[in-house]
Image (cartoon, rainbow, N blue to C red; front, side, top):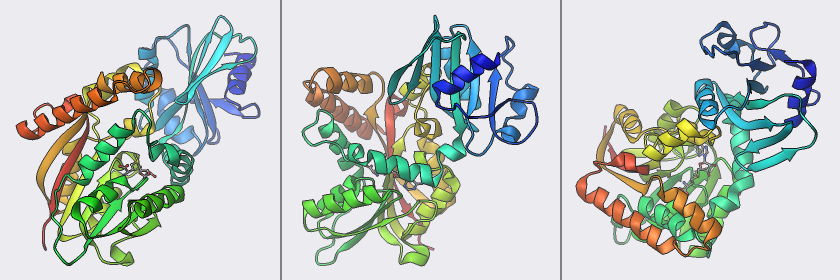
Length: 390
Ligand SMILES: C[S@@+](CC[C@H](N)C(=O)[O-])C[C@H]1O[C@@H](n2cnc3c(N)ncnc32)[C@H](O)[C@@H]1O
């Protein structure tokens, strides 16, 4: 790779002043690049140097000459995981370059000498760091709240209702139930549970102050819910332990895949459930056929999708921590339903929203009746567990 080619690639990622060394050359930790040779053996000397040579927040550029197919780039992205998460791709064809991220495609000015593709990544530890998580969710908080009246909104609310009512815990006449929403986002799971049970003191936390603010406002708008919102991470929760008594009922929906340290996160979750208490936990399913296909074919995936777990692995982790599994469910049909929903929302103005939602509801109901024999046909799982009394 010539100095000119490298400078153009760096410029396309906005790294004009970056000093980048070739991978495997030793020297101080920092930014690195590597041009793939024909052998493509990841266990080679150069890749073995990656953990040592790549700086904490420095970029890695993996250059693939020619016109590689997406599946080949996806294979390299998978090979770099879990050390590095690929967040952008540069594609150069006929001298014209496009930078692709999960937010969209951008054309880069100028004529490029190089022909091929570049995977751009940083250490997963950096991408999933507390600061990065807070910044990401503060910025995207309104979209995680859903848009009432939007084509996807009924589905968004249905999923939260499903999880919030999964344990179907009855309210006790006269006394209020203390409920915790662990990684609450916009708060809808806890709010759905509160509406179902009736008399609830709802506590909730999230790393993002903006999310907590939206959750508090949603709880207030629903009316009659006593709400205590705090900021914090699941690995060191701001409730339970040193922060007050544990809870008889805890929900965590769609959170564990964002954790950079799942063992600590499970410890944190456990510390918030009182002995004899109920836990409902759910998330995306790493083994769904749709997600597996995406990992084979798409060069760019959200970090959470790469980091997702199966229901069994989370169940095993919780059983080791003294939980008894009572019931599991699967929801949100996998491919091609999410793709159809995307087309429905983006291009069809929501005319298929109701039919698609009913297909999903029916499939989830059948899953409940037959005991989840086809869980890989669903993108999400949910479990109801009880913490053993000591
Ligand atoms: C997909 S949203 C789900 C929100 C909500 N539970 C729901 O079901 O709508 C994930 C939430 O997890 C939060 N989060 C990310 N990392 C976390 C962590 N390590 N511990 C607790 N919450 C985390 C994010 O800030 C975000 O609000």
